[in-house]
Image (cartoon, rainbow, N blue to C red; front, side, top):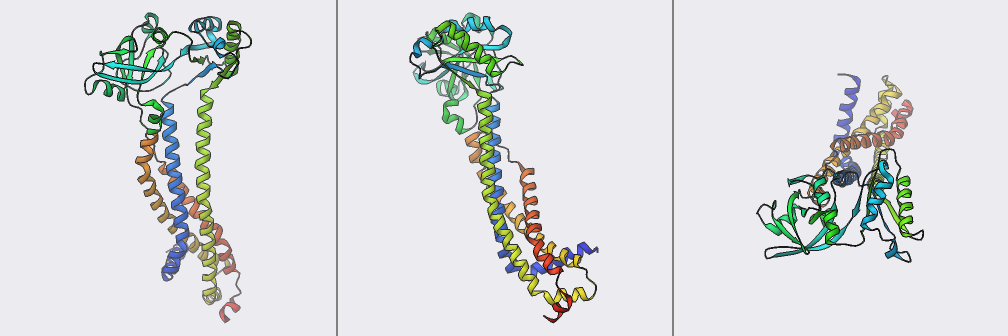
Length: 397
């Protein structure tokens, strides 16, 4: 048996001899580690779930709309005809530009009547949202103003029950629309509560026929190498030419907004984890205290070991290993409890934000790293103090 193995075995024996005291000492590590692991696991899973769900929407582009707080918002309102003028003026600077519409519109099918959110769409599809059945809009639908629509799965079930929605004809306001596609349900109660689970989509050309007048805004997708500020300034300059220099517009970089949202989530997760870290510091102080008591109780043993040739490094290593093992045992138990807590909360998190993968490797790394660090940092002083005891004075004690 190697010297290190012998020290480890002896450290376990010392912990077992004083098992009641050791368990009480480990309680701080158990509480601190379990809270960190639970908070870290749940927060990272939630952050990953939200990010993953938002990522299915793809490139959100740039939103531009008339400022509702200006003196004459009606004069600044973006008209349907403005889209063509901007597209022709900017040319290759834009990957796509389309008017944006959102309205609450009543749907009718047989005896079923339901008012739902309607949004516009085009033949430009930067997202990766799965289609359960059918197809998305194409250029022919836009050019012809085809009376077609896509529904989300929950809305299709509400309107048609178990029957297939494809090919069914809905009355949309005063028009009739044929269902050509059904979206797969977006998982996550957070997005469902925001109205994302039940809505239907119309080609923007058809939307203009159903709801003539000003648009709700523009969706802009800049070409590669074109900055948000450049494309926004160019579009606003054209709108000023069309509606007058006094017209005011609001631009939102949706990509930057999502990045800011993810940053806030990360800061929140790290902050909650840091709070749990305070408990680990308290636990480390408890370990240092109990190791100092152990050194005082085993002073004669230390003197005896030194008298038969034990070096200062051997004594220090023995007590340091005992402190690290106390920390690792407490951290291991805390990891299991925290991990079970994260698993217990997983279904609730997944129901709220969608599929939320728990970062198992991160959890294990944090648990082992923190436990070793706490044991080493707070076990060093008692170990050094034990190693510096005078052997003659120790034997006389």
